Amino acid sequence: MIDAAAWLGMELCVHTKKGDVLTGTLLAMEQNGSMILFHVSQQVNTHGNADLEEILPIKRPSIYINRSDIERILAPALPGEVSRSNENVIM
Image (spheres, rainbow, N blue to C red):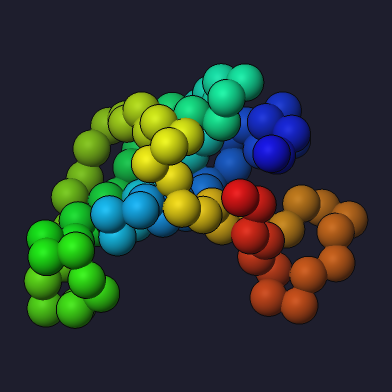
């Protein structure tokens, strides 16, 4: 589990178990790991696979994501952290 306070206001990339990818700014995180993102760009995988021809982009003002739906979260490295790719897998 990440320390939510360190990531508030940062842009995260959330991959869901359905294959959707949501990119947005972390507004809040519950103790169980569920989160609210705002200014969200969402790529919806319409067929449950990674076939790029079947992915539809959607913009939304905010979204609530249940922890049980999250497969992984990617985030930029925090100041002072060393990361080869400047990106951390945080879940």
